Image 1 (spheres, helix red, strand yellow):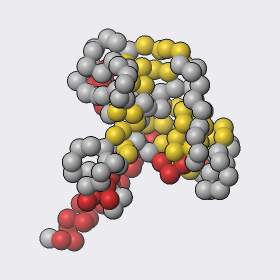
Image 2: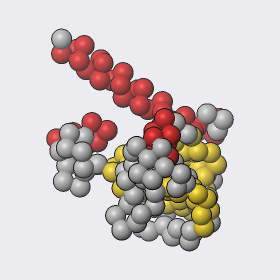
Image 3: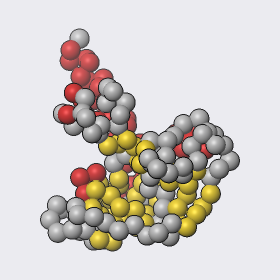
Image 4: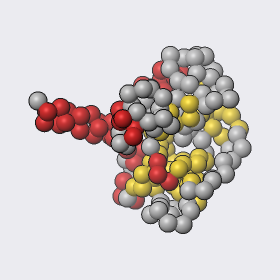
Amino acid sequence: MRAITVVPGAPGSERLEERPEPVPGEGELLVEMIELGVCGTDAEILAGDHGAPPPGSDRLVLGHESLGRVRHAPPGGGIVAGDLVAGIVRRPDPEPCPCCARGDFDMCRNGRYRERGIKDLDGYGAELVVVEREFAVRLDPSLASVGVLTEPTSVVAKAWEQVERIARQA
């Protein structure tokens, strides 16, 4: 299986490499990637300015803006083989700060979060990826042409939520 990898901090280290196919664990989806978005964060990682590989590895699989089709899903949970999904990027701190503890891990205050394709977790830039069911967003098939924009759209939505929260407090 092919994956797009880079050595964070080493400009020019990007390459398409062969990796073993992932095997889903309990509660995980096996997803065939259809589209991968590229943004400024990816450019920063490629330039060597940003990014961190998973522990024990020197290379990071790129890609945090994703659209894929589920190949395998465990029973229950509302996601089945054939569904379109976008993967959530950020994972909460294992020792949650107040934000992570209430599910607002995009607002993590202590910086110990992990992010697919950015910080400490391989991204979605591979032919096949494993995604924890709770970090997969099922998309209606009518959104196939724009589904890869789910992650950047969520950033705007979260920013707007913060604006509204601050406005209510003012």
